[in-house]
Length: 330
Ligand SMILES: Nc1ncnc2c1ncn2[C@@H]1O[C@H](COP(=O)(O)OP(=O)(O)OP(=O)(O)O)[C@@H](O)[C@H]1O
Ligand SMILES: [Mg+2]
Image 1 (cartoon, protein in one colour):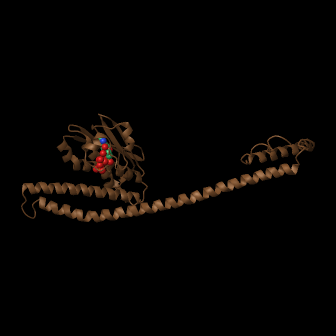
Image 2 (spheres, rainbow, N blue to C red):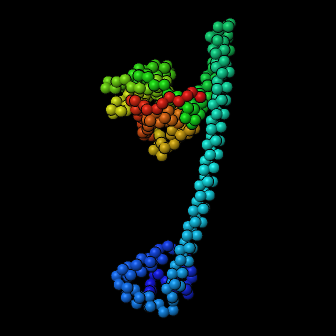
Image 3 (tube, rainbow, N blue to C red):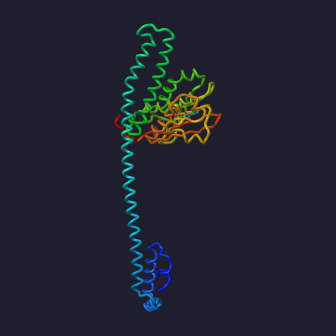
């Protein structure tokens, strides 16, 4: 009996491996099966070692291996427990943060709506005459308050999505009708900026199941960006497309400044405003992140293509029959 099965006592002790004793037992079994005589010869080839010693050595190696494996398994079990506890703590913290944000957003909205409402009354001279200087001030108050309200609504939306509580109320809608409403809503801004806006519908797309308000929000976010970043004299085109038997696409193309390809992965992430376009314009950097979450929560996907100096295309591909069950409103 020689070869791999016997450990060299003179050398340093190797890390116990289960392979060696297994191989040894396997060889022995093969020899025993073949011819008992050969086995005896092999065994007597190791004059200074009794078979029982050899076996004892292998048993010892197996014990070492088993102890080492047991230790590793213990360490893994401890690590798993640690990770589970950390995950639980992170989930609880996130839940508390989301609830806190949701409740303060609600609390902020009520007085803010009051400020906006009363400022409008003053601005429209409903409660008495106002000078043109006063009207200018009121106009600033109104635009700041509306901006703040948009911001609060965006934070509330993000929070709802994070809690998995964004409600989708599906109904049969004509995407083209929704798109026309959104275009009508921004046509004054477009005219003021000298930007031509156009709708390209797809006659093949019939009625789809959608949450009309959320669809409007997605389209508005894309279109308002196109109008915000495209310089005077540019174009913004809203395209609706019957993409497949299960999906449709809404896309907004513009002739704005475009973006570098390395910046594109940063889009659709909260608070990311990139390049010169982002620095120069007002905004919070939440619009695209909310858009992505609204679309993905319904089983859809978003995308962007852009060329510096030429323009950008932002799109959302949505299911015609989303499978999401409406969640309770927060
Ligand atoms: N059509 C576009 N052309 C060029 N850059 C764009 C365009 N749309 C988005 N971006 C870039 O992506 C950034 C993120 O857009 P996003 O809509 O999320 O935020 P925002 O418009 O800055 O603020 P918010 O929409 O929250 O008011 C923008 O700040 C801008 O840098
Ligand atoms: Mg935006």
